[in-house]
Amino acid sequence: MNDYPFLQWRHVQTACTICRGAGGYMYGSTATWHGGIGGAAMTWGICDYCWGSGDVNRPWADQRKLKADEDTRVHLQAARLFTDAVRRPGWLYTLQFYTCENSY
Image (tube, rainbow, N blue to C red; front, side):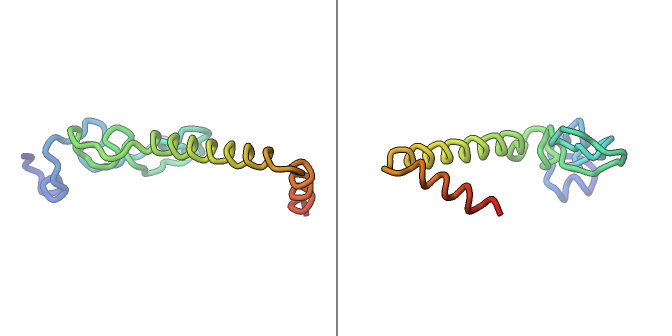
């Protein structure tokens, strides 16, 4: 066990080498672990190595994987809904109707 009270309070046995047990750190831009375009400001965000646990041997859920899984689920559901709509008679008229209705 670590001698630091903060790490003991968080139940960290082996501190993460990136965030040193804090569970997050200061990113050099506003992009954080999401990636993408970053701004010109320092941003505190979750550690993308231990995912917030602070313990290298007990990482929390990988946020990138969770987001990818959710994106996959949404895309599959959209494909199912479209496939079901295409199988119905008059699906093209229904699709055009909804497109026009939602455009304004």
